[in-house]
Length: 318
Image (cartoon, rainbow, N blue to C red):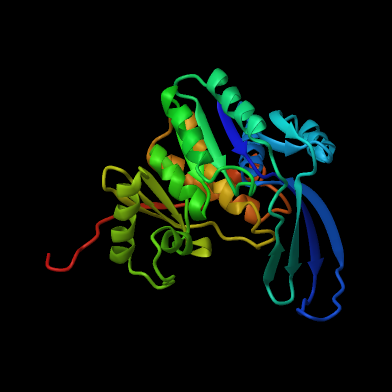
């Protein structure tokens, strides 16, 4: 069984415009609403691919019907712990004229500790060996910063597989649970290591930073690079370069989550690493080229464009 954990779900209000200027009155051409939160996005992608997955986490009771109706429409299994209040609303402004996306994200409502404990208990009583748990996204301000460490320890206790996709202090705590996979971008790696962001890192420089993250507890690291593709650094020292598929960018929100979902899909099918990486890249691209989360047909189509190459890094002095 696969589980995704979303501690801070969101209702994403997406506004489409052809020109957006800060400080001025703007007009939008169209809008639509989808349910979000990184773990939910992962769960939707896995569900689209036909995997047996359950989305769980924390969710506001007052507006949960928006989520439950969407889950029912796509037949997505769910088992959330509900708290009094609302899940957050995020606003995504898509400016097609300037090829920009602007996000205004909520921080989440207060959640009492006893409800957080209910979620931990749920995981502790349901997980079986070899299950896969993907914990993703931000954490409500009232929830302990080390929540992903707590979740990871439970996953490890049951000999399941822990995948973590978060940022800032949450992922630093989560590394203590030695997640099987994390998926940062270069900027997030710099944040985790308290270094100034450098978008022009060489591969050798990046590898040195990866080793620091592995020393902190990360096992395998998938570095997303947007339209440049990704790098995969394995716990055994191998480095792989993965390209991305070509297509028209429609919506980048959820693309990284879908990459994680595609990776988890490949793992659930016991595929070879190269195939797992292809499914990750194709799933991310499928969502980027869709209005919401990519379909199975599109993932399979784009997978044919994905190439995986094992790299040899030549260090100075060799």
